[in-house]
Amino acid sequence: MKQTMRLDKLLSHAGHGTRSEIKILVKKGLVRVNDRPAKDSGVQVNPQSDVITVNGEAVRYREFIYLMLNKPQGVISATEDTRDRTVIDLLDEEVVHFNPFPVGRLDKDTEGLLLLTNDGKLAHNLLSPRKHVPKTYYAEVEGIVTEEDGQAFERGVALDDDYVTMPAQLVILKTDSSGWSKIELTIMEGKFHQVKRMFQAVGKKVTFLKRLSMGPLLLDEHLLPGEYRELSEEELLQLQHATAVQ
Ligand code: URA
Image 1: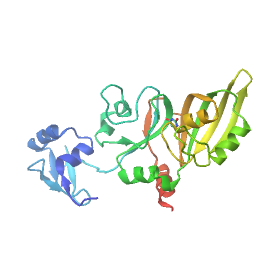
Image 2: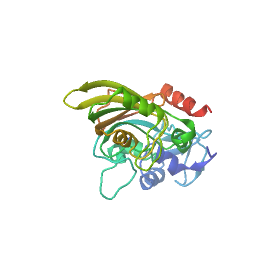
Image 3: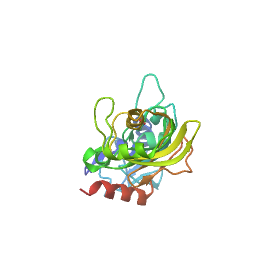
């Protein structure tokens, strides 16, 4: 982390409003740095060593935010879009000002675990193909999924662009003779529409898809679609550990 930063940036990250709102607070003399009124909202401060207060209350600064979202269907995994609602539109202002972005993508019609953060290094590590972070999905499939499909996924299947997938693990939860199945699939990579295209490769169609986990991070089942929460310290440590090895 940089040693110093602008006071208004620090305060806006800490949830004290926009730059112009902070300027007003400073003008009113409500912001103090090391017990002296701040003269200017653009002054450089050191978040580690300077004591900053607003209205007499100490400001706690932190650089990063880590959010677990249960992504609902119908929103896209992007920070901006001209047509569709994005996952950022689901967040409250108090976390949006950290500028989080989604770590990887889920399709518009896919639900489930999506991590949002402004920690570029962790995001990069989680997405790096070299780290082989496993992702587990629950899917409902048109067609009767068989053990042979599981063996094919274990060997690797050729997708529609001839890419052969890395070994993946299939668990068949339920099949019905009327022609549908419920499964869980764990994949180590994140190719475009990968789960849907893997089932396409064995002649079946995914009709519902939900991500349950990403590395050690499990979707909190208390989160309804569209809800989010910050990661616990333990979850964050586990994620950092999972991406640090290798
Ligand atoms: N595989 C897919 O087909 N879609 C997703 O959203 C994620 C994995």
